[in-house]
Image 1 (tube, helix red, strand yellow):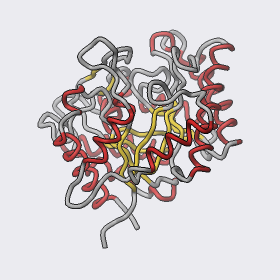
Image 2: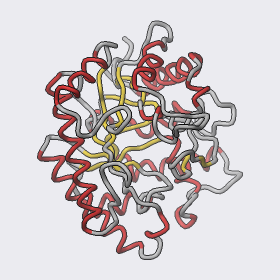
Image 3: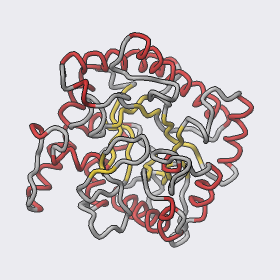
Length: 341
């Protein structure tokens, strides 16, 4: 019998993150992202849901309940579920730095509170019944490296306050590690931060294949590198096991992706692990095999879906049906090898 879990989701934020009006890659509407996702099909299999970014132009974080219900109706109209949500925690949205002053950190927590309110509306509507609320430190690495211990302590305190808000709403937060985020730019620093927060029932880790590949290489933290250029397959397996054994117990949300070993940034987004096409010949990852490490015992951690992250794909790539079919084909392969009933 084919596996029916994890459910297969596509991310909506690649239509917004790194996009800028007046460029070759302007923001892409929610309607268009949903249409492209719904059109993908591989051997009768389609995407089953979307993960959702809670900011304009897709969603006003202060939208009324009726406006949010209309969005839920729209998503459900494609026979999709909504899974994990991305809280608008960055400067320039609702939030601000988790490592900033008291006012900035208060804004960060407020952004999580607004995300929890929206989650409640979606949950009560019925379009959402699983998934987390994603956060990061909303801070670059430059300030953090001046005093790593103090920086991590501040971020942990902010995350604790945000996690208390999430717990009050019956939600869990997933902290996404990327090389561009303070205190989250290496696998060791993420582990230190998660342990400093020490709220595993409410705050866990969101693993992304593209970003965590650069953790292995120590891109922004050479002292924590587990691999060097020219590594063998045996070296890779050993390093990957070391990293995933440390972070998997905390992992409650998972992004399937590909990386070619380089970094990339567009618009206002700092350079981070490049998200490549699922069938990119330069991809460094065996996507299915690497997913196995993260999805081992996934049901025990409450994971019910996985999501493709094509963040900062050029718009002309996203316009091609072949892009989404290749992604969906790889997602199906991950479920066949790593899934469950």
